[in-house]
Image (cartoon, rainbow, N blue to C red; front, side, top):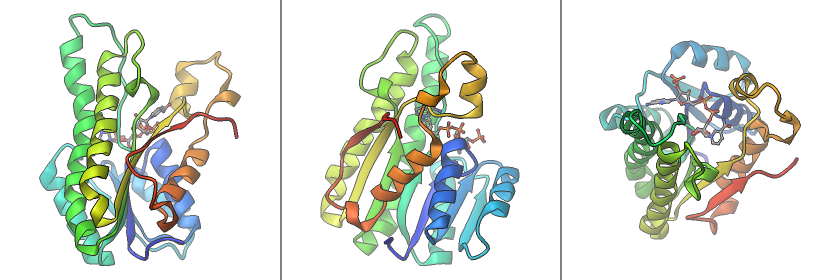
Length: 235
Ligand SMILES: NC(=O)c1ccc[n+]([C@@H]2O[C@H](COP(=O)([O-])OP(=O)(O)OC[C@H]3O[C@@H](n4cnc5c(N)ncnc54)[C@H](OP(=O)(O)O)[C@@H]3O)[C@@H](O)[C@H]2O)c1
């Protein structure tokens, strides 16, 4: 089902990233698991089927281009190329347009937009050389329309959507697709702790988003590019 080259998953130790790794490992995909913390990678590695071919790369800072280039080079050396990038790295802060807003703006733009741009730029050369690639970023609904207290987060996720569109347009003739998904509230420990009275059964599971991502990085998805896909439905 998948290209024989490796799939890079960034934020592999996070809620969505680890679900993507488990989903793809179950499908026999060769994986590069990138994460800042090595401890989360060790835990994740222990959960994968023994037959999984994977490379763990700890300490990659996705805001840093040289760090991303070095990590991609290690991936290419190990697996001969990178067929897909699944970038789950991101962050979340809320607040009004007030005294804290300028710092919050920089934090969100760095955590959500710069990271997506930087890892995309690092992975494109090997995909272009192969004439094939799949890129999936994770945006969010406020990237289409912001609500109160969402200026920085919404703008940063809007930047991810615009980046995805530019990538899709630039890379169409290289047979590289770029799409982003807009998950609803994901059923994570952090969200359950932050919203104790919420009806979590209406939230989206990391596993269901991982299955959508698995389709988007498959060869069968080649006609889908430049899309911002809501992932908000009920399972
Ligand atoms: N959770 C939701 O309800 C929800 C809804 C819509 C969209 N999203 C988006 O979905 C994605 C995944 O969310 P999640 O809940 O799985 O988040 P998560 O568990 O917090 O995982 C995010 C990962 O990004 C990593 N990261 C942050 N900045 C980084 C950097 N500069 N370099 C390398 N790694 C970095 C974090 O590493 P550290 O642990 O080292 O910080 C963490 O592993 C994010 O883009 C988020 O904005 C989430």
